[in-house]
Amino acid sequence: MDLKLCTLVNNIQNNIKNNFYENYKNDILVEINNITKTDNYDVVLNIISDENFYDVLTHLYCSLHYEKIIKVFLAKLWYKKLLSLPKENQLSFLNLVLAIEVDTFNVLAVFKEFMTNKFNLSVEFFIEWFISLGKFVENDYCAFLFYNGIAQFTENNKILALKILNKLLNMEYSEIIHNLVSIILGILRVQNFDGIKELDKLMKDTENITIQKYYYSSLVNTFCDNDVEIKELNTILKEILDKNNKEIESQAFFMPYRVFLSTKKSDVKDFISEWLITNSHHNLSDLSKHYCVEYAQRAIDNPDNINSINQILINIQPISNKNKGTYKTLSFLLVKILQKYPEKFIELLENILKQNDLSVLLEEDYFINKFIEKINKTFFTKLFVSKNLNQRSFAQNIYIKNSDKVNLDSNIFLTVDDKLFELIFKETLLKIHYGNIFAKFIIDLNVRINEIENKSFKNFLDVEISHQCINFPHGCYETLQNHNQACKLVKTCIKKVTNYFDIINKFKDSPVNSFSFPSCYDAAVKGLTKQNKEILDESEKASIFMALCNNIEILYGNKHAHRTAQGISDSESFTHLTHSVEIPILSFLDPISEAFRSIDLNNDVLRLKKEIIDAK
Image (cartoon, rainbow, N blue to C red; front, side, top):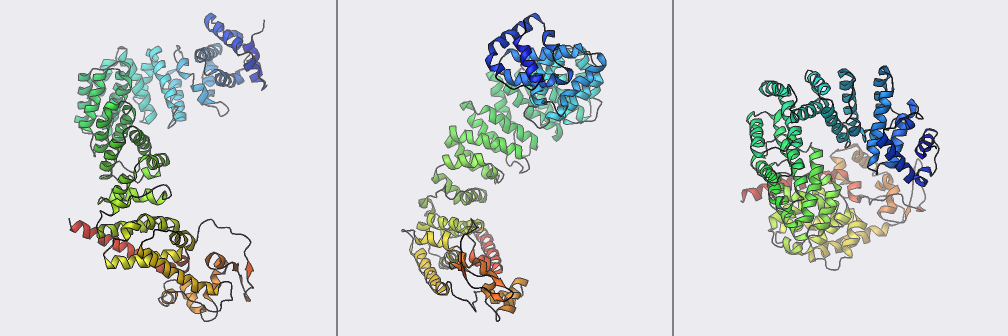
């Protein structure tokens, strides 16, 4: 009687797509169980061609991966296939795992079970094969599938593994070789294999830093596979730190992190927490800081750890901006703390920002979205008006990118003196590039603007608000014009701008022969740019609008004209708009003056910072 499993295998090989597996799933699982119990794999192997083997293996895994028996079955099928081949063909068969047409990741899903078998291939082959597989999974989340298999291989092929280890120790350093050595040595040490104690002594006492790294990282695998006692762990950690070498320092932080994950002893976990609080500091290597964050990410699930985690995270600041992976983990960790312990999050963030601007964290959308969703506006506004630059910048940057979702607490602004308020306003202004954001900013600060006593700053606001309303007629002017609770200063600005546009609108849709804008002539006279020089040369011959005709509808009217060699064409009505962002009119017409405004604003910010510091 033909097996349903064999029919399924033939369908895979012949690329027949149907519902056969779904229809006979239970029968196929019974057959797999029987084959596993009786060790009668030949019934399947006999119908699988050599070139189709890995394709069949991966298809069966994808169909049956949720069944417990499937990994054992497929691993044994793979091993039986290997043994059925002539010795001279076995190496090439295993190397096929890395062929382009093979789904290597799904093969690796059964790699651990496959490596529980005994092997009789050369040391040289396994070194080459392991390194090739290691390169394939490098920097991939599935790398653990490969390295778990190496641990199984070592347990079941100790003599062969020791030979491989001795060869690896004499090869040029690489991360993959480092990982292989630490796993093989760590597992052999757990099993008290002959010769390991002598090898340990040589590696520990050597002056070769690479060998020392191998030795200490291998202890991680030993301790994780065989519960370590606190005294022994403390001795090893002290030994590593006493060497005062940055290259091996990270092992002292990788070890507690890994032991924390593997141990079930609460006293060991408590020791690790205290040890990390005591030994974490701002001068740690980047990798050591990374392991501290990884530890915190795993330990946060226990509410008893929140205080120690916060202290460790504060201790290791600042984290270098180049360590994107560390910040990625930190972003997920901070979200967990925010959701579970909001008060502790506020305390933590305030302290971290005193030492780290967290600019990299602003790129993590998941963190920013959760931060905006969960944080209260009182705390956010306190950051916004803080005398600490990092805290202010952090809040300002979030506000500018998310002004439609974030609100400021006007009562907090009323507690801020004029000088600090002026600094905050001008700092934020330097980062605002859109009229709708500026209008939202003015509305949020409306109550505080009404209380300003400094005449110079009042004059600045009068000019700036008027300027931006003209610069962005839709995003800024219309928004502020429709704001019913605008303060006196804002109302005055709106009135002036309304008069300005009333005058401008008299020219709407009419032929323009001569027109000038403030600062255009001065900028041209100074000869600051070729563009402004051309404006000066042509101003007596034709309208300055000529170069801008295609923008007239956006700026002031409902019609436009084209500039041609013969002059300006007759005006035509617009039929559609192709832009999605409002053009800043004044910035567009007079970029040089806009640049000088930015420089003046920057100088004001620097002056105000110095005055505030000197006043302390």
